[in-house]
Image 1 (cartoon, rainbow, N blue to C red):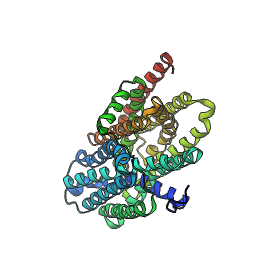
Image 2 (cartoon, rainbow, N blue to C red; image 1 turned 30 degrees about the vertical axis):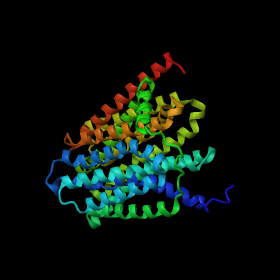
Image 3 (cartoon, helix red, strand yellow; image 1 turned 90 degrees about the vertical axis):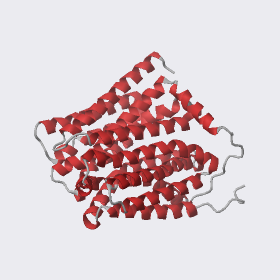
Image 4 (tube, rainbow, N blue to C red; image 1 turned 90 degrees about the horizontal axis):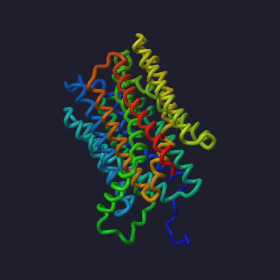
Length: 402
């Protein structure tokens, strides 16, 4: 039966290709974070305006995911992925050539809009190409890869900034987009488009989202995930500014930022081994405890006058572990409430996570950050709101068990 099909790519190369396509968006999002602490001076702009370059990317990255998913079903996975990589490459080139902050912000929006295709199509292709335990194993690889992207990107971005200038980060991403374009074109299989396509697919998509909006538990799950993401993006966006006030230059920022993503990987690993014995709810409660403790400890040290990079970064290891406990069961709950609409649920959750992440990144620019106090208060605010959403969710589950 398979003899008539084209020779499939090596399993290892296929997985590596998919992981690279998925990771591109997060790399593009974070590689320029070390440079952002200097853009205000370079372009003569306010820090709030600089933060818009991050928020603009995140909004486009989240919003376009809602569109790329249905389009990939209608037009083919590879076609949408190639289009997205082309747009991301154009955005990266435009960013490298930018001479003012307005043009750079537009370029970042284009980058985010193009990069969203890799996230959506990569996940869809995992569903298309792998079954059973193999699919679960690839999903685990994706989680590990996503956790490694921010620290590696910020380390590389900081080194490039110091040695070759901030534009070099965007030159690298343009080159990577071109390489991934060729890799997708030559190395990924073509997706069989549906032979019968409903004429009113936008209407059907809207009906699916309206159905999910009538599920209070779904709304609470999405709120929880979105506020968790806002906490993390607030950290990602504000950490370079705080660390800069502590004397850490672009070349060293990534080494301190990496504490949270690496701890997040550890939390995911522990969750995969513990959740079968404890269940989802205890893991989420434990995760919330770790999260609030980490943020409170960081804020407490800053208020006590411990203004040092280690006093800022080390307590947030607890935050990373806590998010590793929280996110997997929350994601599982989000997509399992209405199994027939799992794809739509994942798209809505992804969009709201990125939108709230953009809000978190933007709020950083509204305050000064001579120390970690203001950043800690922002992170604590988002974390407390997430805890409230979790309490309401569990209370509802007690009264309306499924």
